[in-house]
Amino acid sequence: MKTIKLQAENPQDIARAGEILRKGGLVGIPTETVYGLAADALNGEAVKKIFQAKGRPMDNPLIVHISHIEQLQDLVAEIPESARELARRWWPGPLTMIFPKSARIPDEVSAGLPTVAVRFPAHPAARAVIDAAGTPLAAPSGNRSGRPSPTTAAHMLVDMDGRIDAIVDGGPCQVGVESTVITLATDPPRLLRPGGITLEQLREALGRVDMDEAVLNPLKEGEKAASPGMKYKHYAPKAHVIIVDGPYEAYCRFVNRHKGPGVAAMCYNGDEKALEVPAVCYGGREDYAEQARELFDALRELDEMGAQTVFARCPEPRGVGLAVYNRLIRAAGFEVLHIGE
Image 1 (cartoon, helix red, strand yellow):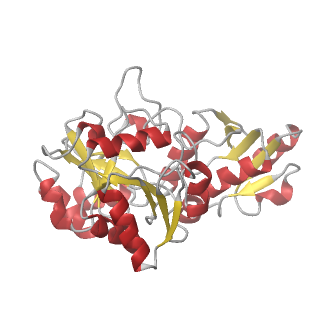
Image 2 (cartoon, rainbow, N blue to C red):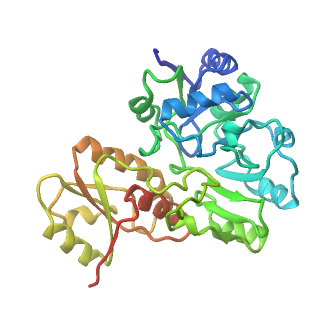
Image 3 (cartoon, rainbow, N blue to C red):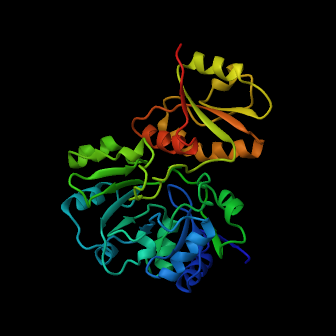
């Protein structure tokens, strides 16, 4: 298969992407979070191709993307008032809501669950492709399963060239980590995956919102993923990532003691000046939004460097930093070293 490269600013290319999707093909699309691998969400056979291209287990549910809020009512069994409030504040945007699903949602999308995850993306190219296709699109992140998510079309091509029909290049993603996922199918609502919309913001809007244990911990044995991004190891580079949790000086001493061939650091801006190993920075120490934008790029850069062991500075799990921490602990397979002064 030859993967066609399309441009978001070209109306003919957008129309071509829509045609491919209507015929059951796969198209990479930009969103404000990460690049997604899209198929017609109402066509189970087309959705199966997503799992094949990604090498993704079929028990991992997908998110359905819409371009107009009116499309929601055909996809879900009911729309609670809480959903209307969240949509008023953050749709279109980096927020996914989970509802009891309607009969229109194929099992391939929901992984056999009675619920469906729906998002209304803010990126104009994503909405234009959905409009051109004339159907909601199922679209997980556009990487091979388990690898860091792509935030540019070039990153997606590394993983998907020759495996999908086309990629629409809409420039770099602005958020950099996947959308926040909240389920409204439970009482109280529950955060399943943190993202650009924070737990604090959700609680300000709705009152009580619980945080699922799997945000910070592995799924229990036999537990089914209720949302994308809940699997044990995810977002990982080829290198062995170890998170190092401790003060700056202690982190630098630890990394320098372990320097050697193939050892690298993943740290905050400026940390690299005190390190004696190759280092990749992923944002300022207190700039959680910058960390989110830079995280997946940094993980991919470490692979390009040929790093074998990576000691990653531990992010602060608050605000958008919770999303960064959630992605990084999965990239590290939950391997965290706590060091003192």
